[in-house]
Picture: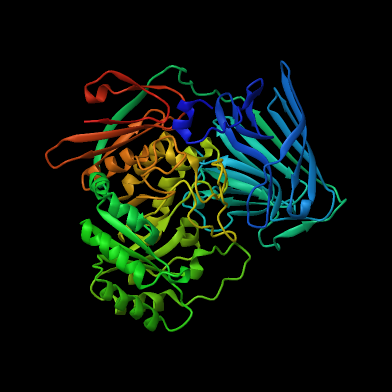
Length: 612
């Protein structure tokens, strides 16, 4: 990877280049053994068909392909390869894959797997991703494993559980006059609404979650699964935009005020933050979010450290307080309140959540013991009677959607998101921005006009609700569920951050937190990054821009291709409009900005541009 590419994504490791396969109107990208962006006459039919093997912590194996053969003919294509996964103790699962596509709209992906010895896994088999853009809420026909057929709809609001179970096939409309049937054989499949995790897809996957996991594939017993896609009909495809056509930006109506911007502060961050106060002042966050977790040894010294920063930098302050919940709630929270007073820490708000709620409870699992949230909130209110009280989940919208907190007891609700729960490639992370409006709409449907905060939401995963721990990433790779991500240090993160804020702006958030100040989620650089240690990561400029927009009236800003460019706009009381544009791609993108009295600009890869 070139130095410029290192600046873009913070890593010298290249992503595999996709191989474009085509047969008549059918096309697909072959990447790392799987199919992405399956289209018919340019319309996306499926986002992916992937054969996935996961470990007991839901981490995804990265098998090495051997014997790869790709045959691209005039009216058909075929791919074959072998691969293997090496589990704990050197246990090996091998499989052979065959893919065939035809000009009549048929696509078959077949895999034969054979474990050499008993192989433990949480999932082994196909995942099929239906896109959400244009499909959310649309009619589908589902065929179940018992042969019954039902006409239904994909959910518009995010379903907390599985919208469809015991699946054999699902058929949806591609465009008027054209439909696609996806048939799944070899096991029982079900669908989950991946928008819960900010994935931009509905995922149909093998083996119901109600069955035990991890489970064991017995050595020497073959396992075969087949996915068959059949596209039928002759509806006319919409006119496609030209490859060099400019993305147009247009402004619309006024909306709610843009949110305060927060940064998350951990006890270990304090000394670096105090040593860089001028940079913190230049960044200008309206909110400091102090993370306090007694289950990880945080005590009075952590609160004293927070008080030192709170004295040195004037901002609203919220204590993100994990509640151990192992004994008397009043005693626990009163003790925290006493230490807050002893430390001299002046808080604007406290957000509380039981520690056990940081772990997800998947479908079919037993809910862990947890104090009633009404009791947790009541104890917090008694301990902190004079400041605002928040609650929700310190994990992701998934957990909040599945365990809907009694918001009438709260002054605000909160949750986070993370785009690398299931996949960590560049495209999937940027596509995750498509899911954010569905998350905010679903949250509003649950909690109404209750003040609403999101974050800290970062590319890297700060905690793993689905396994024992986040994945270490010392070599800076693109890894799902990683505790740090190289792209946070590159231009990529700046574009993702502006895009994130643009997607959630219509929701009228009270606060948005998309970084820490230091550390792996911070705006300051560490050793080995594209910029000098201690200097500013590109995300600094993005967060600073959001801080400057806070409190301005949101102006609806649309682009003609939101897969390439997103826009965020705010208007001051004096009528001045500020617009931020983010290029979500690794390509140069021409942009028509005549709406702002200028003709065109060319946005370089992952660039962010301020207008006004």
